[in-house]
Image (cartoon, one colour):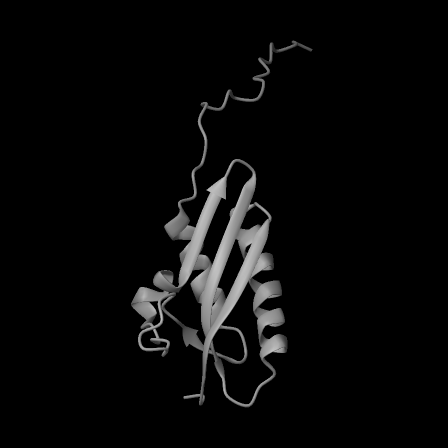
Length: 125
């Protein structure tokens, strides 16, 4: 029996580098997650005009989300409009848990701080 020489290749050396997830990409993940949450009518602008929150269109969702990254920390501020007649604290709690779960699952980083500002209450559409 002839023994064949088998060359074993070790694990290939990965090229060095890193993956950078931008604030905008995280804001998009957050925005789509929030819109799927029960009781959220939409995202709001962080700036109130004459005391009234402006409902943002789906292509401007990221304007109602502020993301800040620092080393291993991830801070998110959300500005939302909640459906009239629902418990605001329950809706906000659901938004908090869904956003934290999806961001950690998709980005691989836990959310350090998540602040939710309810900018208004409106009838559901």
